[in-house]
Length: 459
Ligand SMILES: *Cc1c(COP(=O)(O)O)cnc(C)c1O
Image (cartoon, rainbow, N blue to C red; front, side, top):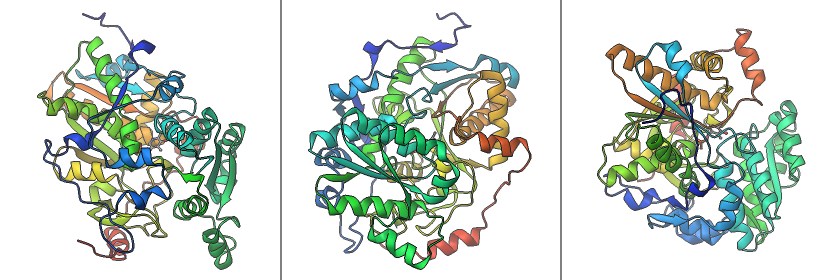
């Protein structure tokens, strides 16, 4: 048995996962049915050709494939070794503070070069592009987490990187931009004069602060125009979620070390669903193979309640309606989220896989306003020392909620959550919280109804 003061559960580099786990292989066994992705114009099921203008073949094959385990290429594992395997911690001090009989563990992904889980997918995406002869990757970024992850990854395989950064973030959050430029990326405030989509918006509204939707349109336009330029997305799609499954596989080995092989509750935050999926999917695989299923809880902001209030229907991935239509939990592609501090969770849609798992009752979803979320983070940082990204703070809040329920029930449950990033670039948010200057945005139902009314109905 492990010493019960043990705090860090570490794996040797030799235990780095060798394969990613592909949930597509087990959807049927889980009673989950996926609706086909549709061409945005014809509404016919999309084929590989609909994706290959912007993604390399290997990633399109992963997007659609049903092979259960996909080998991680050795050059990708070599880069993963820079920060993986990542630690699993037992939250002894926080448990004490909460006076809970529950055992709380957290997986920490903030020790990656860019401070979050995102390089788990930016690295393989850059690798497969380099193998396919791509010379440049384009993407969008809001607060800068994804742009940073792709800037770093492209550098590993000698690719150029072009990041369209939402103008207001470009102006107000210069440090992420400086980081991306230091990795060698070109960062352009969006909308820009470089693309037709950008020029159109600027012609109408020269002083616009930009949006993620416009930045996506610019990055995609660049990729469509040049055969050796491709586009890269940091969440939502199956292949992105697939790459994140290194997280949960490591957690399983680490829980075994801790003598807590079968956790009772798993908690993660959801923006587009990638860190949550990467953390929980390996437990679904084990369940398909006969193990009991833990309760699996997704936590999102009350201000962008995609899973808890959105409709499960077909919608576009972007505001400009250029992407294929996917059946997912959505607030409508025109939805403009309130200015909460969790930039990574301000997306109108959700991964179609995560949406279907919720619909089938395999996972649960809940939400919190940002003030209680920051309160949980402050309590956590004072007990455990690590300052969570506000996105990850939703998982902290969720774990706390579960720990207090365990206390009420007098039950020694094992709760595990994914602390998917640190908040060192989010200190202005903590500053506003500490100054009492934050608002808990409650989203009026009419606003959701209104933006959903603009989505064309497709069956
Ligand atoms: C981008 C980001 C998220 C949201 O993306 P998911 O795909 O839902 O994981 C959450 N947390 C952090 C720290 C992020 O950088």
